Length: 94
Image (tube, rainbow, N blue to C red):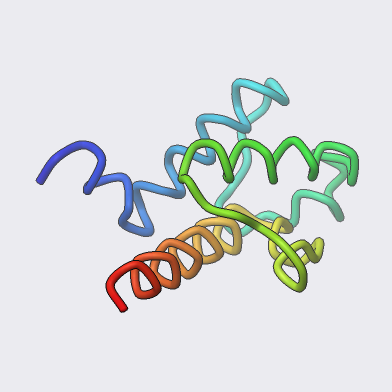
């Protein structure tokens, strides 16, 4: 399995997102930690997360997917990326 394929597992995505957060916010978080309720990140930082996920994983986060709940935890962000990648690949193969 290539590195790229490996990163598209739930665990791989979570690790990459955790690494991004650790680099940007200079603290470690848990995959199920509510990043906003715990005060670790702000709603302004959510826009940085959107841009990072879009650019890193070649997805478009628009409309209903832009809700804060999709960025609340590392788990929900990984799930969003997997869902959008799957939707994108399904559309390309149709």
